[in-house]
Image (cartoon, rainbow, N blue to C red; front, side, top):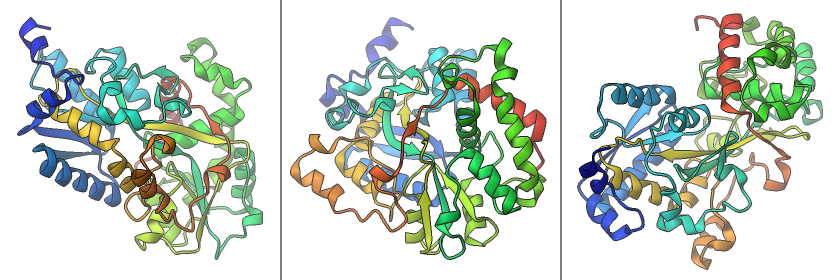
Length: 393
């Protein structure tokens, strides 16, 4: 990097300097745009940082975060070392791994220098500093927590009949043909379902914490694909088509076409009920043996044009005010990354005042958290899934 460019980099240790540099900047935030509620939340963030810090936030709505990663890769290949088109990316997992491996991210350890990092629960939430087995090294700032949770309509389905494991789900689908499905990978919700089944069916789950060994890949994943071979004939429309994404799948639950759906946000159903997208009889459940869990983040590309503005936005996203609003199921319902015992009394009261909704499980009801596999597993499994099952939705 040229010396002049290095000198121009914002230093998050000098926060007033960051605030001064950020004023007047436009931050292009590349983030999944498939949820009306999330888009509305980002609009609120944009209005707030504009008013308080003079930063203009533009939401670039993505269908797949990999597209943003590909843009940064292309800009690097073209020699665009500064003035990049992306300032902030909503990211985790394989996309973070790809950018970290290719040195496409802004300086290490910037996240721990943000003023609001003081409130982050990095001590008891290990996925805040380890993203899909890879240390974050302060290259991405936590934004929210995620855990795989299933939903059903208690008006149609008896809770006593619900499955309690992947194998139980297969038996349930066999007994209730056409009443379950999952989004077609590489949609991240669909891919998350594959990882849940993989973890439950693999002979030795510890191998998933290491990169894929091509020599043993077929053997390790054989139980997963045998499971899917058995499941697919019982799926919605016989797996001749799949829901595009979570909103599509949720609509099928609302329409009575599916009886069990799932999401990566424990408050998703309560949020949908609050917004009259699901009936108020929908409830949540997980598997007693555990379900997949992780943290999602924001990161700054190495060649971002508005790094100071991106730092200001990232800091605001982990403020108690922004995190409490995000956890409100009437807004988004995304679980916080903050530690309640680090907050002031007034800020703690913001969270305590939240009504999490009738369909949201309490933290002690969510069951064990299963660790994400190394990102290379998702890439290889998606490739094999596509070759084996993909359809033209």
